[in-house]
Length: 313
Picture 1: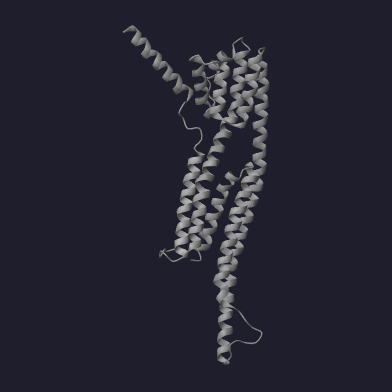
Picture 2: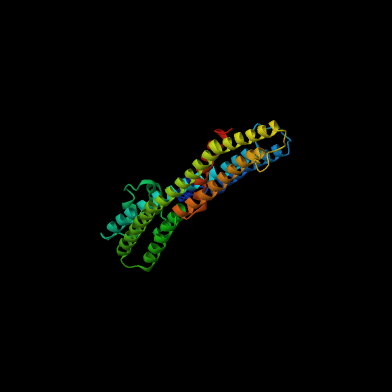
């Protein structure tokens, strides 16, 4: 009975260690979100094709379903990527505070493992759960170097991976790890401050992209709401005068009213191109990422669709 009880305790401990190490947890859900986005996009593309070949009598035009397909692709994946990037930024912002506290604990003669356990009692925002998990791993007997490596694999951000690599090498080499931690903390702080300054500067350029897009939308609205109706009215007047004179058309005066709907369609296509291109450009300017630009493309595309297809339906 004692052996069986000891065996159960050992199994329970191994299970707890595995749960603490985070085995079986999903590392990245971006592939699932991308698959869902592509599936929704495929559904709307099929609807557009069926409507184009008149297999189904759908209430909207094929171009509308194409726009919905693009929205279903850009929206979920773009907003997920932006949320993930914001989460990473929040994690990296609090990393220097944690490294500073570990360095201060190390100056009192503590080992790296003890310093991490002591510093884990602090509050570090979104980084706190991962730090507490790392401290729990150390308390379960995982070496500090291995626990730090597992921490970087869970958080998996460029700044955390770089800092952890330096810390592990310093710990394996021996010597005063506290001094290394202090330097790493200052470097991480400078990196986050530089990144914040860059974001503030680039946000101005992103705003310029949005302003230029909405100026383009306003121009399209003026053309489609004022210019094209006047041209259509002038075309009808010319046709009526020609009929009154018994002519097919007045010589030197020819206004093709029939192509005005095609011009409106071209306006819609130009808005789609601008929305997608300007949105991706805004993402590259802001964070150097096309996937983050999908969120901006979604916002611009839905704004253009609502203004042109709803106001001029």
